Length: 71
Image 1 (cartoon, one colour):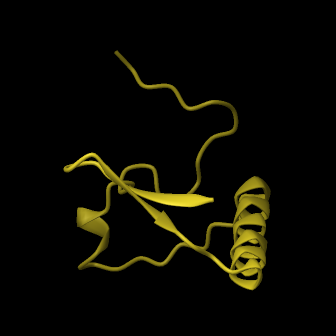
Image 2: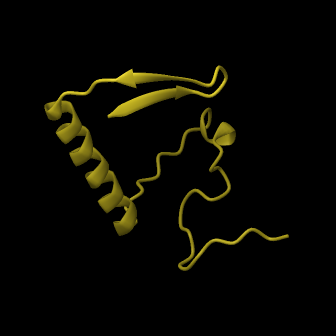
């Protein structure tokens, strides 16, 4: 079962998904996870969008190993 949770009103609404949609979305998520694991992040620079992107400073080549925030 899937529920939509509205954080502002703290209400939960059940949502029905057909088996076909669930399978399709599961396949898409598995593909995305495989791409993330493979490091497949094609860079699409855009002068209008990039400066507002929350990942602006980590876009592109990321060093290997865990990312740590400096204190």
